[in-house]
Structures are given as structure tokens and as C-alpha cells.
Length: 273
Image 1 (cartoon, rainbow, N blue to C red):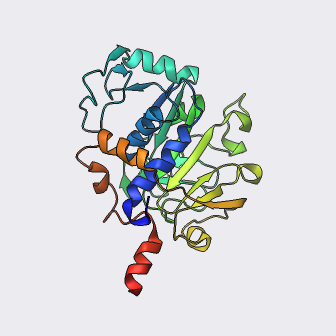
Image 2 (cartoon, rainbow, N blue to C red):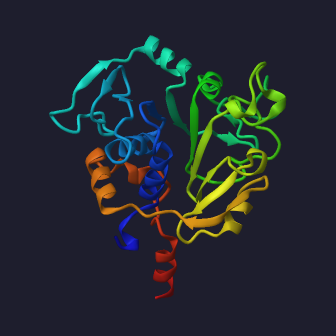
């Protein structure tokens, strides 16, 4: 596949799908169109054991496309998955959610509730903590960040701590840091995990044409880096074809501002022509 053949949204979707590799039979929940597409792509390729719902109350043997319509006539509603069963699944730990926090701090704690130091009188009121506390304690989570910046990766702690992270001072009684399970962080600049020293956020790969300096400049705390820092893998022709089936209206192209090319080097080449 040539460099100009994929967009940044498609590159991020493929990178996000890797977060579900080897998960086995767990409920994959992607919050937002691209995370949902990523989970579906993982199920259709390298992790067929994944469980997915139709985003309402039915389990599916084939992931539906992001418009909510069946991918094929063979798609089956395998079993009912109402709220009571969802909660049983969450509490058992058999779930991996990919979510989009508004703020992430150096501990991996996140915020979707409100912005501003005064919680009683916030500058911006958002969703509230919703399911983040229980989800982060009970099962694996990954983060999807469309705009990697210091507004997202904040200094100190999040304005409102909505989910558990690797902060010993906020661990619930009886919990240890080893029980916290935050997997991957997919951004428009790179792929990261929490595998650095003392669970430090660590850069695993840079998207084509992105420098490590740019990633660090857009993060408010120090990052660790793997020794074998890689370039994020481009989508394969097979993955591109599956994404086209799962998203026939190409809604993925509308999820990022201007949806630039997935390889920045192509942009530089075109400017220099």
C-alpha cells in the first residue's frame, strides 16, 4: 500500500484495533465511531473471539457497521445483552473499553466531568463521571485521543478524577497498582502505554512524519520511550477493505479535523514539489 492511500483516521483506527489483540472472549466496547470501528476491525481480523453488541441490547456474531445496519444478511443476534447482563459483565472484568477522556494525567487518571479547579462552580460542565469509576476498577480500559495536546495530557492531576489510575494515594482500600489495567493510548501523534518506570506513560510508536519532540512538547509531563521506538504500521489492503465494509458511508473521514493523510511525509513531499 502506498503512503497516500490512507488517512489519519484510518491509521488511528488500525492502531486502536491492536489494543484488542489477544484479548480473547471479552466484551469490546468502543466509545465513539473510530474506537467502535477499531474493535470491529479487531474482531474481523486477528481477535475473532471478541464479543460485541449492536450498541443496544443484542450480542452479534458479526459486527454491525457504524451506521447501525447489518454488515450482511448472515448477521445473527446471538443473545440478549441488557443492562443487568452488562453490569454482570463489567463486574466480572470480562470487558475492554476504549474511551475518549477530556483530560488524562501522568497517573492515567481521567476526567470527563468538569473543567476548572472549583468543582462547585466549574468553568465547563461536561458529562459527569458516569461509568468511569466502576469501569476503571473492574476491567481493562484504553484511551483514544483525537487531538494530542497539553489540554488533554495535563500537569498534576485532572481537574476532576473520574477514573482510577496508577496513583497510590487514590487506590481504593484493598487494591494494588498491579490490579489497575490501562492498556493503550492512541492519539493523532503516536501510540503509548503505561509500561514505563513506575507505570510512566511510554511512547511505543510515532505516526509517520511525527517526531518524538513534538509528542513531548504536546504533553505536560515527562514521557518514557521504548528502546525500539517504531513507526506506527500503515493499514494493510485487507484492513482498508474491511473498514470500507464496516463504514460504507466513510463516516470515519469526518471524525478528525480535515482528516489529513496518515503519513505526514507525503504532505511535506507535496509542499516541496
